[in-house]
Image 1 (cartoon, helix red, strand yellow):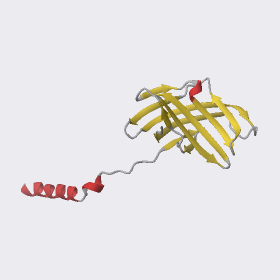
Image 2 (image 1 turned 135 degrees about the vertical axis):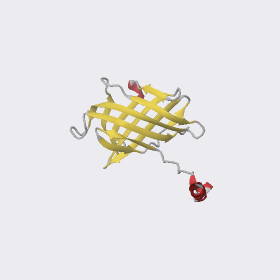
Image 3 (image 1 turned 180 degrees about the vertical axis):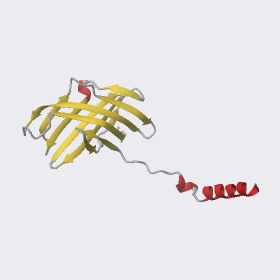
Image 4 (image 1 turned 90 degrees about the vertical axis):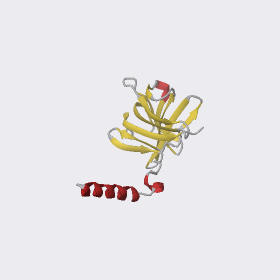
Length: 163
C-alpha cells in the first residue's frame, strides 16, 4: 500500500517541477479583432477605429476586398456589461473605393441590431463583446455589384479603446 502513494507523490512533484513559474502561466495577449458571418460568409476586419469619448464607445472596423474598402461600426452609451439594442443612428455600413462612396446602406428597420458587452478591462481599456447588425442598400454607384441586404451574424470583437 505504501508504493502507490509514493508513486503518486513522485508524479505530482514531477508535474510541478516540469513547469517553470515564469513561462507556465503567461498566455500571450490576443490581438484586437472584429469578425462575423457576413451574409453567411466568414468576414474579418481591423477594428483600429475603436475609441472611447466620455461615456460613448465606438467600435468600427475596416476590411479590403479587392480595391474596395468596407467600413462597419456601431456606438453605445456604455453603462457596463450587458445587452444593448442599437438605435438607427448608432450603426453604419458603407463600401468605398479610393475614398469615394460606392454603396451606402442604412439600418434595416424590420430587424433589431444589438451589441452584448461581455468583458471590460477598465485599466487597459480592453472591451470584448458580441454583435448582430442588419443593413439595407439605399445607393449603389455600380448597380448590381453589391448585395441589397447585409447581415452580420455571430459577430465577435475584442478592442483596445483609444481616447
